[in-house]
Amino acid sequence: MTRPRASFGLRDSRLRRSKAQVAAILESLESRPPPLSEAEQLEIRARLSEVPAAPQLPLCLPKNEAGQS
Image (cartoon, rainbow, N blue to C red; front, side):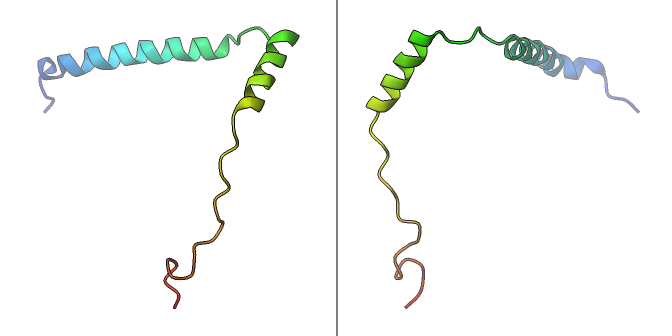
C-alpha cells in the first residue's frame, strides 16, 4: 500500500528546489570564466608570495606520543 502523497509535500518542494539549485551550479561550472590577463596573473603571484609559508610539521610523532617506551 502506498502512503498518501500529502505527507511528502514539504519534502518534494525542498527536493525540487535543491535540484534547481544543483542545475544552476552545474551550469555555472560548465561556463568557465575567461582566462586571466597577464596583469591579473602577476598580481595573484605577487599576493601569493606575500603569504607566509605554513610552519613545517614533523612527519613522525615523538616516541612518547607514539606509544613507544
